[in-house]
Length: 422
Image (cartoon, rainbow, N blue to C red; front, top):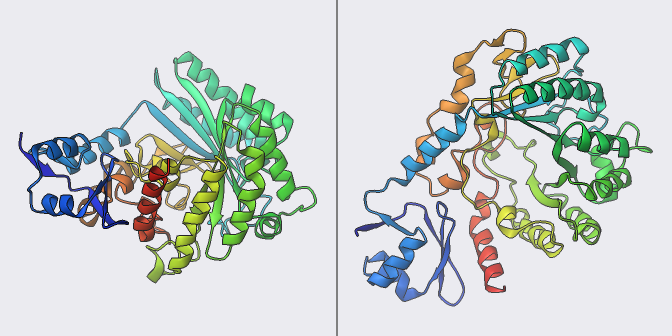
């Protein structure tokens, strides 16, 4: 059999004159010594070595087109009509005032009963037999308008039952409004399977950043207590640790605080997420400008792993993706409290219709699913894990490439170190 080298092999110098080889398509890792690397580069590998590298995806069939496979699989995922996602803003209002919020300055709108009715009719008209229907409750803070959640959930669950469709929900929340009663609704009425809650640092830093309107009632301790309530449910909790070059020590402190309390939980994870809202145009494709601050992420990873709050592979995000974002699915909607329809919550000002008239800008709406990938992305070794980057980056000031690109070598070294130490 004739082999060729995968276009997604990536090489990083490692200790003892070895070289890490990671394939971003197959997600396999190997270590080459100097002699193996030389023979690989000169196409002088033995038959046994070729067979082993073929199994791991470093060598592939000579007539295989990996990029075409990725693009075709991406198209299938984007056009999957059985997966219906509705990201519904119950309100654009919030009980916190985070400095980095991308909705800063947006007029506060709350979904009324009349708009709920329109949302219900619109969604019902898009559900088909056998679909999987997911509502992601968003805001603002979605729990400021539980009436809308109750009303829409009841109607859509009933419609799903009629059409033999599965129904579930997710929440993006600051976690301050969770109560035992809310958890009961999540588990028994709203079919909630996941909730994302942000912690921006330890107590003082968190309270300063969140700047709640009612800090005596809503604060770090209140949110941490609510996470502990959720810990004992079947709802999976993702704690998002928003990281900038300024809050490194605070992020470590909060991990060390919550780690012992949550390390035995099977349904709570933590992950680190970059904040880019303050980037200027020159820094648009960077996570943050300070490379040392970038590298501090590795220490954050180590603390998260130390307390069993995530797996290394998921944390460092080097697994192949099927598409760049769930917003790129043809049947994914962002429904604003006004009833307007967008594709992505980050670029929510780009409207493609409304729940009364449906999708009026069909070409603009379909572009998210059908657009060709930029040539620079097609030629990029990171294509399988980035999938052409963030579509919203074309419209707002946020990075196109994946956040950890500036330190990918350090991340792969960290990953191989972890494998070596098992």
